[in-house]
Length: 206
Image (cartoon, rainbow, N blue to C red; front, side):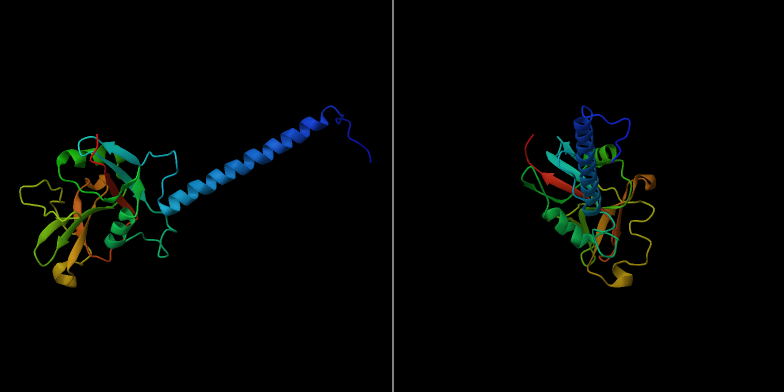
């Protein structure tokens, strides 16, 4: 066998090392891309990358804006309000159980707006109860008339003809409109699906 003119015994081990390093780095990079895609599809933040989780010292809670990719649900449309509630409740951060976010005041509202630059509709922990015509937070507290609220003043419910009266449903889930629609609340039917939800991890600690 004729050996190429550029080959020498001294350079042969170095070529083996370079090939080994190339394969190793390529494999590592592909694994990283796979993990990143999995995180996008499942909505699970990567370990060591908590850019989607922010701490609010006012409420002593961590807040996570979670986006669920197209493969997280078979229909590719994200969870309805009840499913989002269950996702939040099964989530943990620093050992603290999550819940859909409670936004009791304008400071929390502005914290979310500032830290997440909301790109799309996102579920929060509020329901509008059709029978009592009251809005109730996920911890059971009722949103009073004097309490902070961020309803869309032009229309408090989503314009899809699914309301308490038209669809005869017991409650409507509440979500945030995206930033380009002024980051306000709207209510919608219990079957509506969005890919984003805001999870709160209430630590009760500074």
